[in-house]
Amino acid sequence: MAHRIAVIGGDGIGPEVTAEALKVIAAAGVALELTEFELGGKRYLRDGEILSDATLNQLRGYDAILLGAVGTPEVQPGVIERGLLLKMRFELDLYVNQRPFLGTAPGGTVPHDFVVIRENTEGPYVGEGGVLRKGTPCEVATQGSVNTRMGVERIIRHAFGEAMKRRKHLTMVHKTNVLTFAGDLWQRTFNEVAVEFPEVATAYNHVDAACIYFVQDPHRYDVIVTDNLFGDILTDLGGAVSGGVGLASSANLNPARTGPSMFEPVHGSAPDIVGTGKADPRAAILSAALMLDFLGELATADRVRAACVEPVSGSTTEIGSQIAARVAG
Ligand code: IPM
Ligand code: MN
Image (tube, rainbow, N blue to C red):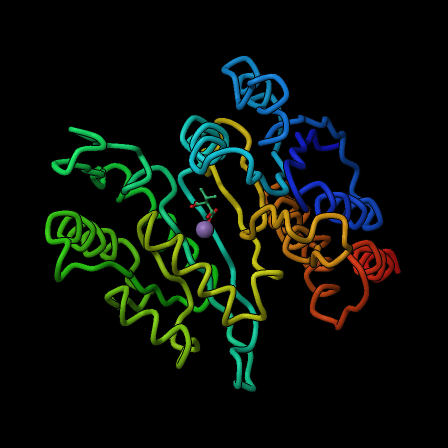
């Protein structure tokens, strides 16, 4: 039976790269039943909808959501991000943001292969805090980081599970020397869950040190688990040291499968290159491969990944067609 997929192409280059991802899956012979949802900055400017509860409830009925990129310069920062992307992550309980990095660091020769598992529903992203005396010299703004035992424990347990499927090495990244309350909760939880996974070797890095290792020694990593904001920043760096953000893919997972998971490239809508054919569709194609993994189409997902490793050239659609030809053959 065909997998039922909600497609949100979004803004900027989002629809272009999503079309190539769908082209590749079709060529690989996996049947998808697609429903397009026009959401994002453009839609918001047209009729005010960002993501209504009615639309959200419609999305709940799909097997997965494939997203291109959302956001447009005409809409102020935060509106679409919070109202659409973060709303989906929070409301669909997509608590795992899994971002694989397979590539060679600039100047390096041997490719590394690690995955960052980013907590996706808590931390500074929840919107805790507020502002007082706005616009005055005495303005006060606070933005707290929310960390729950349940939230921290479930992401850490998921990360140990992923480490068991790989090279059995898990690094926690945080800033326990400064963020002593949240860091302590993370560290204690990590130590306790580690007891359940005696085969997994563990390590800890402060986030600033991890930035150095990402550049100078990425081979030390297998699986990394970290909080929402550290994970956001580290995964851009991960992309930069793994062939560029044009290759960086991500899965926003609800491992309990109480609803659809969402798959999207790490990059944004890049309005400056829309329509030029310069957008690299591989991040979207590799995100679609993560979707195939989650849908149980493991062999096809591996074929798509292998096709993305071979050199590509040309425009967005030409690259998509090259990869499609490889998976079809
Ligand atoms: C990402 C993006 C988002 C994030 C933005 C667009 C809200 O940067 O998926 O990494 O910060 O999570
Ligand atoms: Mn980001």
